[in-house]
Amino acid sequence: MSLSFCCPTCGAMLRVTAATAPLISCPGCGEPIRVPRRPHPVESRPDESPVSPAALYAAVAGVRLLRLSLLMTTAAVGFAASALAVRVANAPLVPGNIPDWLPGIIFTLSVGWAVAGWLGCWARHTGYKLCRPAAAAVQVEAWAKAAAAGTWLCGVGILAAGVLLIGMPRAMLAAGVLIGLTVGLFGVALEFAVLTVWHRLLWETAGWRAANAAGRYTLDFVFAAVAVMGCLCLGGMTAIGVAGGHERVPGELPTAVKWVFVATLVGVAGCVVWVLVRYARLLADTLRALRQPEPNRDEQVPTET
Image 1 (cartoon, rainbow, N blue to C red):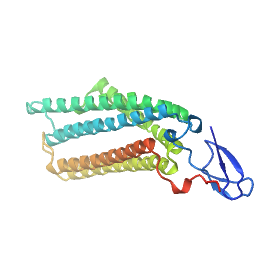
Image 2: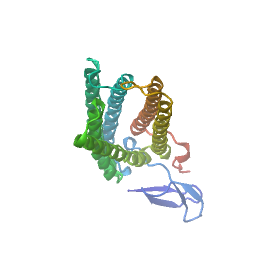
Image 3: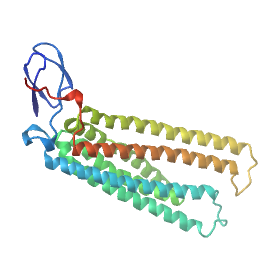
Image 4: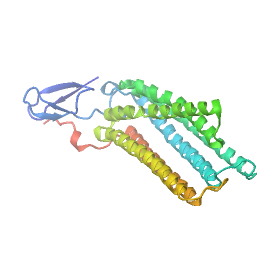
């Protein structure tokens, strides 16, 4: 797909492709020219945009499903955080000294985590499939397929984490849980391939400013991942230091260690919530840009005189 426009300095007719950089030099006068934004699919003829209106509307429906999956994921995180909080508050769970109500509560919260998480995976998978026609139009369909495949791997990790929330398994089951968690983490990383789809799609429909939002979210996710690892490492070292300064009583966990676990859980939950809020903002910006192009003063097509 090509785009034709005139050089604002010498008036030469130029033709560029969709993969051309946003800033080029005029072959006639040598002046730098910013390539104008391609017309939005809803305001142009079918031959003027690589994304058809039907594909665009399907992508809008897909983004709406992704926003719904975000609510389900938030609910799943709430169930998991509650289950961990209950376990930490009653740790250690010594056989024969476990409250009668505790197993039922933990099992219910773990099932809630699994159900909400799997519903979120289904909604994301369907949303990615709806975005595939638009992704194919801008030649990034493979990234949409990779993100859709990542949802099923993420579902395996959710199931493994649910088993871990109920109780640490032993022997071969423990090995299976660890493998499942590894597969789930790989699926989460694979789902971030959709950021490439958003970047290219927004570039074609709303301009480079809207496309940069996907890149900014990638940096936010990396920062949040580093912060989570820092919280876990700092919490683990603090718990070891605090526990080493107290006399160990069989069947009990020092109160200070419990507070360290709670502080670590709050820190990790805060990072997760921050990432979810930033992703919700990205989806809102993407939905708005797909439905209506953002005004961009730096990328206006020169008018004829």
